[in-house]
Image (cartoon, rainbow, N blue to C red; front, side, top):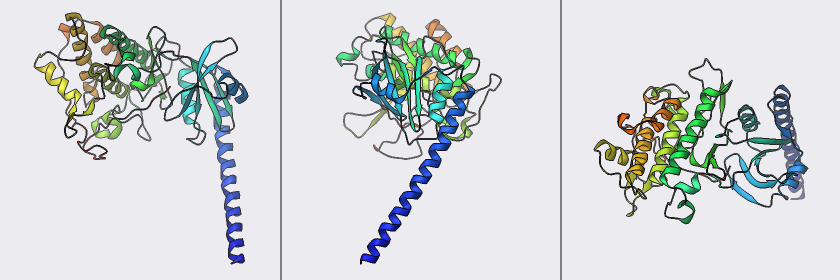
Length: 371
């Protein structure tokens, strides 16, 4: 018995050493990859902070703002008393690509509708990104459950302005940068709001950079959040991956802003589901009253109808039928009478059974909360 016990202890010790050795190798590869990127992009990288400074500015990570797929966000204060949002990235996730994507993407941008990157920290596997602080948090807080007090301050005019601001930010990413940037994760959770509810696109962990002359790009794996992912990211049979993939996500988000809920919601009897894009399309097609919450005048009805038609154009299944984000801006800022009603999107609504993983639907819905 003692011999067997000793053998097990020896085996556990050997396995422990092997695991630590693998960990050291992975850490070394990770550090080399990140440090090489920072060395080659010194002109892009903002100020570098030590991990001790990150701990100090967050008061030892005392105030948590939210959590997402790439890490946890904490409220922080710089030495000049400016508030910041500190995203501490998951130590064991990926090979540094999420960190590199953030710095490479946001480091190239300077736009009122893109969140500002103030600094970063890299020490071994510990890494953090320091952003300008957005006091009103994410758009997600304000568009669902509109009867709640937190969303009562966002009327239709403000929601329209937010939609236009997001489109301007996307246009800048697609056309205004020296290197074009595809975000691949546009959703309410990743739209942050400042004091004046000016929207700023955030979370570039899934972003991809490509040259100006490229109209389509190759993808090694699917990117995005279920419910906002364009069909061509599921299957190339639907078309090529391009900037139109961001337009699709934007359209899904706009329709959620209009509906004040997830596009797919279980009905009151918990047995039926209403797929909002199909429901609202029928209203628009038949020129019926939209019957949505809070529309009190003709101007608001015009705003909502315009946002709805634009959203329906954006979620066309074939990328060739979707507008560019520049055209989206023209449509939003133009005359409602000039907008044609798009063809009905022909993808099926999500599966009826909650939790189903059926592949008949390309549109399951989920969300998280944070930067």
